[in-house]
Structures are given as C-alpha cells and as structure tokens.
Length: 313
Image (cartoon, rainbow, N blue to C red; front, side):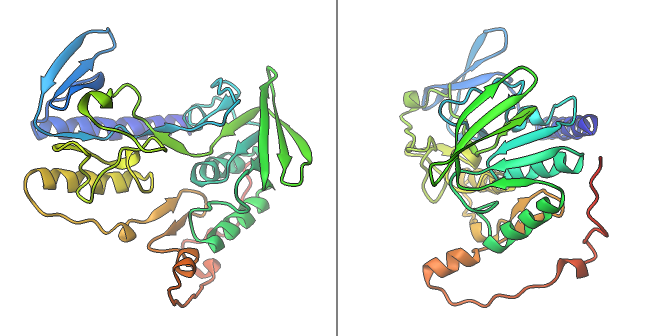
C-alpha cells in the first residue's frame, strides 16, 4: 500500500515537472525567502544562495501539521500525518488525537487494515465538525462498526513515548482523568500555514493571529504585486481550493477579471465511504436564519455503496 502511495506521488510530481518544462517555466529548487518586495533569495540544500528579481510573487507554501502544547512529536511513536503515510507496519492500537478530516481519513485507513483505533477529541462532541453534523454522526457510526472507540470532550494532558508503546493521558470536561496505551499516537488536530523562513517582514507583509497571510478580494497581500493562495490564506485547506486560487491570481496578474465562488468548492473526506459537502451546512443556515428544506436518501440504495463492511484482519 505504501509502495503504491509512493508511486502515485512520483507520477504526480513528475507530471508537474513535465508541465513546467512544456510551458517554459524556470524551476528553482531550494528555500525561498524575501530580500525585499521585488527580490527573492533561493538557498539550495548545499547552502548556496542566488537571487532573482521579479515584479509579481505568488506565495503558495502550503501548510504543515499543527501540534499541542507540551506534546513532543518524535516522528517514531508520536507521529503526524506525514509519518503515518510511511509506516512499515499496521499499528496494533492507533490513538488518534483529533477527529477532523485528517484524523478520520487515516483512522479509517488503518482501521480497515486491522488496527484498533481510538479517537480522542477535545473541543467538539462529534467527528468532522467543519462539515454537516449529520455526516459526522454517520461517519462515526461507520467507524464504530469497524471497532473504533471515541472519547469526546477529552483534553489531552500528556503523551509519553515508552519505547514500544505510547501512553496518552487526558481529562474529561467533568475533571475525570483517563489513560490510553497504544503503539502509535497520531496527532491530527489540524494544520498551520507554512510561512517559516520566508522573511515576510523584509517585503512588508504581516500575518494574522493564526499565522495566515491577510489578502484582499483579489488575493493580493498588503504589498502591491505580492499575492498569496492556498493554505497560507483564509479558507479551507484543500488542494483543489488552492488550485482555483492559483488560476485566479495568475489571471489577475495578467489583467483579466476572474472570479471564485467558494461555495461551489466541495469539501471531501477520503474515508470509506467518502464524505463530501458543497455550499452551506445545515448548521450554518440555522445560524444565519436562512430558511431551508432538508432531505435524505439511504446510502445503501446507491450503486457506490459497498456490499458489506469488511475488517481486514
């Protein structure tokens, strides 16, 4: 499975490199940072520097896994989504901190491969809280059938690597404490913008309290000619959202007048079965006081429905 994943990644990245060459795009490999608003420094893996000047810049550096205070991610037993995609074994007991999109996806994968999965959730009382509440409940029901356990409204206070196992301590909202012992702990509480080392200050660009780069309706930063897209700006951290914004920024730079309707960009959770949503959620409509009608259709009647839930022990 990991080998297949690596093959897909290579095909995708090689395809992007091909498109760069085909469209006569010059590619520089290294860490980019601002010298000033029109000058960029590129440092390669040998520590060598070169500078290029430009009229326009699009910042698209993406995001990296977030962590919790007091938790050391050692990348051995206490891991993020990055390390979870390179494991050499199926965990016996995978403890997942968080039940958002990433935690749900990876918990679903390893649960189907035979791992015992336990979800520890601090701030919410349901799965995938950014999506429709009914979808979170259905996904939780599916994962329960696979043997997953859920501990909602629990605040993680300590995660300790004991060598061949991890001990996670948490307390509930009533002050009670509990411990879980597993062989891996996945910290999946979300992602944060990756802006370290960009030297944004040299270009005159600031960040908000969540580390994101503020942009206007044209995705332009406070500095004329510098744009930002994807995970480093507001909105959902989705690759296809970033792609739409990349096209939008490029078309804006060449003088066109593009538009994006963010309500038409779908949210997708790659569990089994998948969960997807587009537009406002029911909860959002309620909070806005917007009248709506709700309907449902049994998933079992869909041709996409699997014949049975199979645990692959």
